[in-house]
Amino acid sequence: MSRPEPPGGQPIEVSVLVDGEHLAAIEAVVAELERTGLRISAVMRTVGVITGTTDDTSRCSAFEALEGVESVEVARTFQLPPPDSPIQ
Amino acid sequence: MEFETAGGREYPAGTTTGRFLVLFEEGTAEAGVAALSEATGARTVTATDEATEPEPNQALFFESLGVAVVDTSPEQMQEAGLRAAGADGILAVEAERINHAIEARSYAEEGTPTGGRSAEYLRGFRDAVLHLTTADAGGLGIEAATAAAVDELQATWGLQAVRAVHSCYSGKAIRVAVLDTGCDLQHPDLQGRAIQSRSFVPGEAVQDANGHGTHCIGTSMGPKCPPGGPRYGVAHDAEIYAGKVLSNAGSGSDSQILGGINWAVQDKCVVISMSLGAGTRPGQSYSRVFEAVAARAQRAGTLIVAAAGNESNRPGEVNPVGHPANCPSIMAVAALDSALGVARFSNRGINPDGGQVDIAAPGVDVYSSYPLPTRYRRLNGTSMATPHVAGVAALFAEANPGARGAALGQLLTTRARRLTSLSSADVGAGLVQAP
Image (tube, rainbow over all chains, first blue to last red; front, side, top):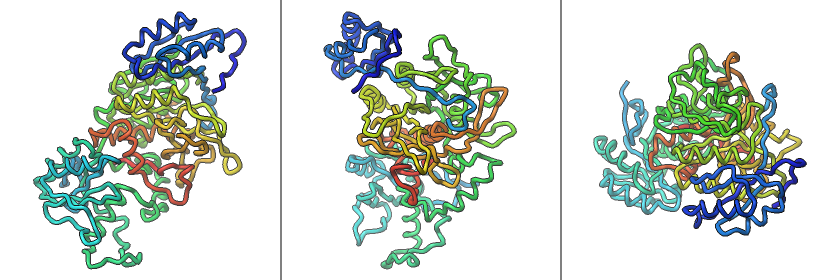
């Protein structure tokens, strides 16, 4: 899928889905991602996701090629309407 | 008042037929039928043109509906019902109810041959099947529901429309996570409630300085008797899990939301309510990460419901269900107004692969709690519809300890009230209904 370009210079947040076979060995996947240049933000063991930041979206394909990684997505952002908006 | 019981549920005397109904899980009805026979001792017979009414100590299985009607002694009913409710393949057990709203219309009037079957039985069975599969809201009187919605002295129109006010369930001991802008922990209506909370927004406490989260928590789990106002909360005794994944300015990212989901699943929340989303384009697929996470959550016993999104402006402009509600394993919730029409802003199921609307709930002119000093506020949005569904899911979860994850979602849709004048692309299975 397309990966939106980040606003200039900001670190890019990514979500890494760990495949079903590597959930028990998630630490090894974390170590490989770190070695490949992902700065780890959180390891979510229950749902099998690792989040982190990188400066370069082109690294995503390198993350995705690692053993135990099912898919990598650049984090989307959410914005609620202002509180005084009638539609929420 | 006297009560009759089945499957642990109490009904006012005279409102049940004395039989009970068993709803089987899709695809595993065979196991459910076997479990039912074992629990009740009743012999299971498949319904045919000849066999249309259960004989004493018999369970009549309606294959096409996935429902059995069981005739057993009242003494056996409660115990057997309770045992059957926990068995594999069985989604729900309840007393067969007489629905007075449609009692006046006989089958003969509608041209259905009665073929010598007892009118009382046919009426009871039709009521029961309507209740379980909720075939058509038309016969239940949309006008009546609309008229009732105007009077909000006792309860909001939304709680009346989803029939939460008539439910004997409260969501007791069911954990419901609302992933949003946090919660006003000082709100007087929430005092005395056990609230678990965590912030996934760097540098911000759970305390809700936006208002959106407090409103959604109010709708899903607000109190039964708020001081000096109508009831607005569905599952008034559920355990509140307030996860702050959106900042006080209303912004957040996938990472924060995934963190909130991970926390809620780990803490065994049965339902996660997410009144948030990002718009999608026609043709756009769903997030592989969120889909896998939602499927894993379901397998761990957690159902995720999310807002379909407000990017439409009907009738001229309709937009597809947003992210992450467009994931196949996340239930997408559309918004209805008090006349049970689609809210003009509510998105439509346009994209394939999970991009459909699954269910609808009240989302226009929704009164609920708001951070002090405002205290209460009326808001509109699929954000307001979503916590109605989450609250009703908690009621179903309390009533059906065996139904979790995907099975709980299936209960919500099979028991929804069909809205035949509307497109399922807009409202999915219809208006969510409390058990």
